[in-house]
Structure formats: structure tokens, C-alpha cells
Length: 222
Image (cartoon, helix red, strand yellow):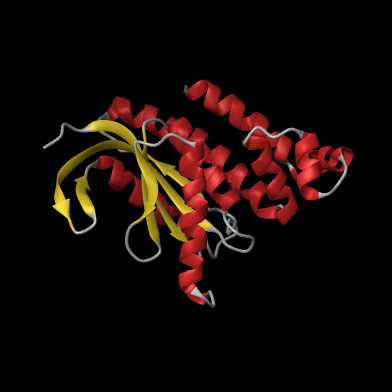
């Protein structure tokens, strides 16, 4: 059995997938989107489907998990969205099953707790919530540190989810391109609009704030 190691486990499910007219096509589109995320963000275990509407991934650090989950939302087709549970903890491979390695550990428990928390908000005043983060508590000292980290990360995620949730499809496309390193001139060419229109959209939609906020947070986590 492998020794446990501290990681960030991620559990993903497709929001309201049962109401989709063509579930098979939906699954293909989601897998294609997650494939693009896997090409952009290094993962200990790539983002892949497991059972039903769920997918899972493992990242070596929180910064990578946060970047991957933001890109995942932006890579999805227009009108399709997902929920994400991020869990810090240990992970161990305890055997093999029909879908590969069988894993256990506090990282998966925390990720499950986090996605359950995200689901709770679906019909609340925070219905825009799509992403949540949780970490295990081992002792009193860890409790203070873990809860502080959870509060800071989830405060960021609340703002991030709200901004992304209010974006138009074009604004999401522009933010996605910006995160991939495209220039405003390149984005203008892709969208068939002027560079000035791109600049105005990025400022008005909140994309610039998201990029700046991510840089600050990810810089502090690296």
C-alpha cells in the first residue's frame, strides 16, 4: 500500500444533467472540456469521469486545483455548468477495481464534504455557488489553521463563482482566453470584435478582477 501524501482531491458533478435532452452528447462535451483543462494544468491524476455524472482529479497543490476548476467552468459549452468539491488531505491507494486504482483518505472525505456543501446552496440566496473547499481537522492547532484557510479560500470562491455566473458567453470566452495567455488583439480576432471592445468587456464583466485576484491568491499559495 502506498504511503499517504498531502494533496488536493477534486470531485465534480454536472449541474442539472438529468434535464439535458441528450445526456450522451453532454458527457462527450464535458469530457472534451476536461481534456483541455488537463492539457493546461498539471495534475497528479487528470480530471476524468468516474461514475454517472461525476468526475475526479487530484492536484499536488491548492493553486493548481483552483486554476483547474476555474478553467473547467470556462471550457464547458454554453449553458452547461458543474459543481466542484476541493478537499485537502491524504490519499492512499488501497487496491484496484473495475475503474482502476481504489483510493481512500482524508483528501477524498474532504472533497465529498465540500461538494455536498456546494449542493446545499443550490436553492438558497447563494444559488450561484459552484465551488467549495474543505480540509480535515487533526488537532486544535490544525483546527485554527484549517478553518482560517477554508474561510479565506471560500471567500475567494464565493466572489469568483458570482462573477463567472453573471458573465455572458462572450465574457467567459474572453476570460478563458486571457487565462490561456492570449492577447487582447488575438481575442478580438477570435471574437470578431475590436480590441477596444475586448478591453471594455474584460473590465465590465469582472474578468480583470478575477485574473488579478487569482494572481494574488495563487502567488501566496505557491
